[in-house]
Image 1 (cartoon, helix red, strand yellow):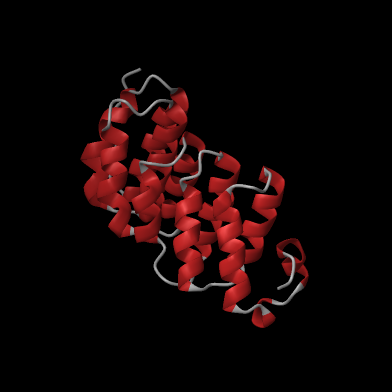
Image 2: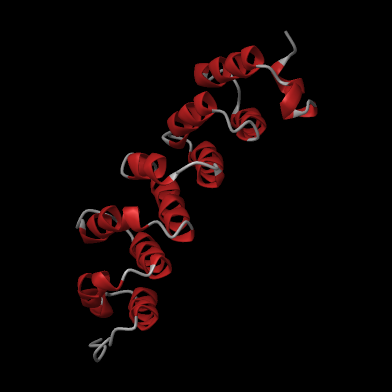
Length: 182
């Protein structure tokens, strides 16, 4: 078997399942350092195989946000319906990966994600305005006008960026924002 670190030089079309499975086992074992793990996750990310997608989902939940981010980027670019995978990982991922998942759901314009994003937005123990801001931007990109009343209260958010983006999102949705009460 070829050494896992040299797999990156091979074309994905010549990499057989046995080598990919061996690399997944190696990555799951945790023996590689962060840099090598990220490099090998990127190698696997080129494969677009269902069993690789399942492994990526595990790595999104890694306590290391760098590994989680690389895996999340792969899943978001996967050809077949990444929304369900991303939503499954949303609440269990690290804070920074959670923000990236929210952004990816917005880029995917996934109407399926709207209820989950609204729940995340309205969950009081979600720390940080960056997550609220990301959720509001994602909801704006998805463009579901039925969410207007649910985001309107955030016109009074303590963070100015959140307030501004709620107004922008409401404008995108074609709904009046009312007066911003700061």
